[in-house]
Image (cartoon, rainbow, N blue to C red; front, side, top):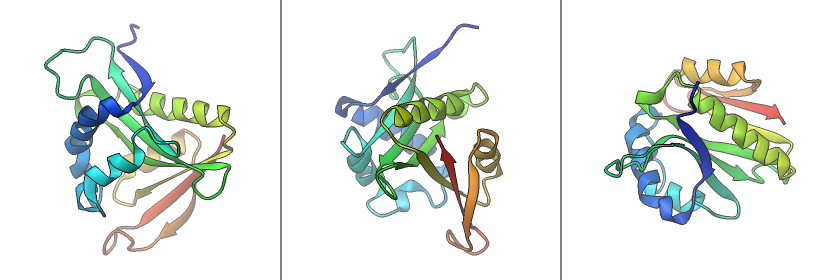
Length: 167
């Protein structure tokens, strides 16, 4: 099978397509990222190509020059030294709706795990919410273990589920 995308780390020049990608999937988060803290602009500022955080993007190998996303079909973000110097936290993971079921999120997660292990990190943490069974199933299938649940954290009856994985 022909590989249709490559995974690369973002650079400051990727700001606009990263912003557009987050805006595309914003409504899929609970609450939406645009409604949290400083919204999407603050998230990008804190996470785009800094010493403590960055995004990996899955980008189509053949990009249409008119594509406002510059070929981005998936993205994962992480914050290093999250709980301690040996841990990192996945602060964002999403796949473009048109490219789901192609293994994009799995490839991004595996690449992030590989890079973090290479940099000396031992654990990766992530969370999702109880009304997102697809995410819970995804993380469990790739070896993440739930270690805590915060009841009603995201609203009445919507719990935050925390996962971790030793890498």
